[in-house]
Amino acid sequence: MGEAARPLELLDAEAYLALEERSPVRHELVEGVPYAMAGASLSHNRIVGNLYALLRPEALAKGCRIYTETVKLRVSARTFYYPDLMVVCQGVPPHTHYEEAPCLVVEVVSEATEAIDRREKLWRYREIPSLQTYLLVDSRERRVEGYFRQGEGWLYRLWEGEGEVEVPCLEARFPLEAIYEGVGI
Image 1 (tube, rainbow, N blue to C red):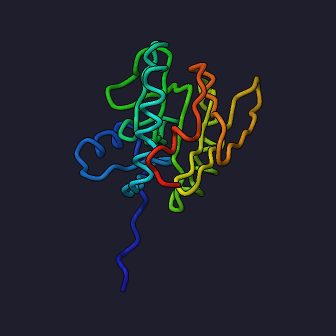
Image 2: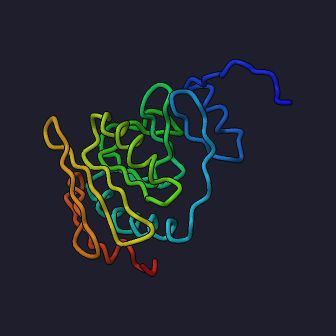
């Protein structure tokens, strides 16, 4: 026999931040509902590290802040994500535990995260006024997809195997070879 039904309690930002401070497990918050996050593969971790090493000098030169995996991005009053990498080039951080105005967000795609990264996060990230670029970097093959703000719309670009990925807010380009260095794909 199952347990008795109970009302779903939606968390607001304050309750979510308090939960995260005391929890040994990270959670993303989607419309008030917390979802525990799984660990990452070695390839995922290596790709994020490579991207950080490539982007950090460019970000610092432009006075931007760069974060990986453990810093939250507040997308709305009841939605927070942990992007794999983000760059913020404006203002001061709104809080000690999250940012709100990235110009670049990167998610490293795996079988477990692909559907969320391609649908839910793409839809929500595009609503962030400061966002200029959303990159999906595949952890299984040399493939990077980019969504680029162009006026009121968005452009899509795909790199497979080789090429140079653009990061307009940093006025930079990086070869796929460098992004996937040491990954073995």
